[in-house]
Image (cartoon, rainbow, N blue to C red; front, side):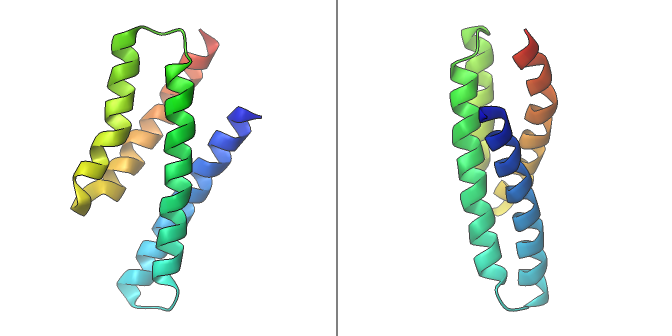
Length: 101
């Protein structure tokens, strides 16, 4: 169930952030609403991913690395969405290996 909620929140956040950004660039209505909804889904995904990381049997260095990787993009406001998407894609790929071991 947790795996499903992580995947759903990730997919929703990516879709809403990309569509919201497109709407904002084109100055179409509801662009801000979509972007904010995507940001909320991204926060839910990040919280679920950090909980999963902290509960994993991996080393402490590995856990700290991923927690910093998820939190750091939001320190750079101008590029936070792009960095979030990059970190999320890498985590989703690495997550398969982490969950299996």
